[in-house]
Image (cartoon, rainbow, N blue to C red):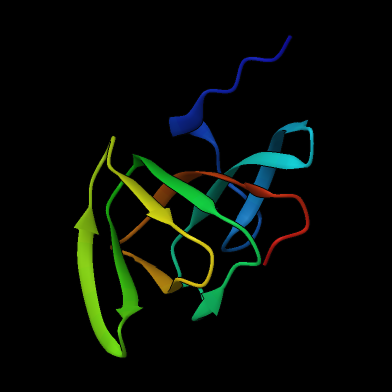
Length: 103
């Protein structure tokens, strides 16, 4: 049993995380950040849920760069091979569900 107050969570560094669960090779973590993440491609699928704040999610599709602004409750799904980069607008708290050990 675990209760996590998502809006109160602060990590000691950008993209620091609180592990919530590890189930059958899938990890669920709560991240806090105020800095952008790097461009990357996960080796599996990723579900990215904004719990607090705003995040501009950049992604490349068919060689073209695009972005979408995600607010509280918005979900970004990155399929295998989707190159993407999250850039918070101020502080943000994000729930990430992905393959264990993924970038």
